[in-house]
Length: 300
Ligand code: MLT
Ligand code: MN
Ligand code: ZN
Image 1 (cartoon, rainbow, N blue to C red):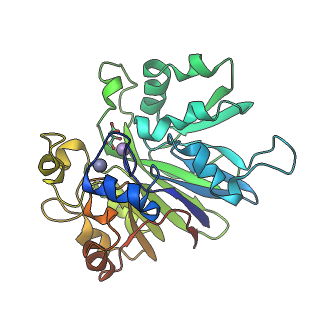
Image 2: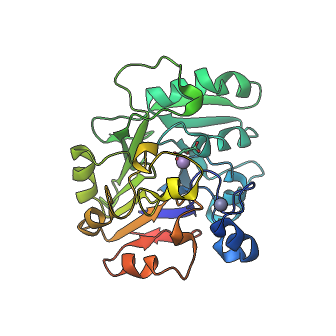
């Protein structure tokens, strides 16, 4: 199985356009500290890739990865479609950026589709450009994706709706936020991608134990970070993101998993890990945990 890490930041990116915090200021003066919005690509066959979450940076993310460049025919693209873990704006605003396509395949839960169609009205807005074709992401078990070698499943991990979808009806029982599980039938390798975790349900734990590579919510270092930073009165957990350390921290559970690679991703600009020399990196590395690095190709 082959994966590309396209971005590693939470909503806003690093630096965020209207933020002068220490993390954003550092990234303005040192380009190597910049982070694009969190996303990966998963290879579905020779020269075919699914992008997981379509971020506001998707154009630059495609340009930064030769494997995602078009060709050899003028309008041939290796991007087979987009798989969504949720309907948050940082994971979906890239869809209209792909409107030059003749059509776009989107794989998501019913609730996410309802938010994008009914809340953002993406079907209507994009119809004159690129028709969206929807595939339901199965929640109960892995199912083959478009007859190719990948099997996918969305494991519900949060009931948090995007703010713009607060009043929408949705199909009952459908998940707003999932951890994406992908199995490659060619080699049996499994990746779990979970950039937003409000909890650690049993089904997620079982999937993580069975995975070769995992990406987990690293938005905040500790639960009080958002309150301390002064941009909200909610803790990390209340915002739908289990923190890395301390109360509700995920680091010990992540370190106990047998996966070959265990990454944190979706870092907020307030997270101390955006500073390359922060001792938090060493602390995580001591238990085999990594902070995802943009541009990396992961071969499992
Ligand atoms: C989140 O990760 O909690 C959301 O992306 C927040 C947002 O961007 O509104
Ligand atoms: Mn986010
Ligand atoms: Zn900032």
